[in-house]
Image (cartoon, rainbow, N blue to C red):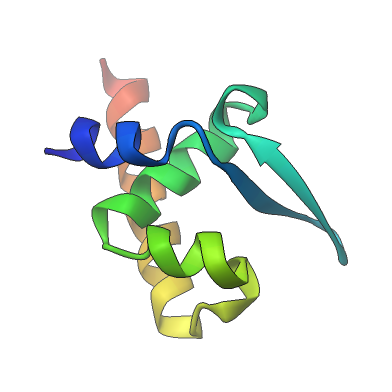
Length: 80
């Protein structure tokens, strides 16, 4: 299911935060952490809002959830 959601958004450009600037990047141009961040946002159902308004449109609660899930995934990868 996640793969299907990611494929839906693969051809689009995403707004990625770099300090105070916002840069449009395609999924292929993102580094590993940016991809993990976006994949996590897709899992939480936030992709459409991100595409429309960028990362600034998320609440502190939503960004906290993304960060927590990312942290868990990173720890799981290190254990493997």
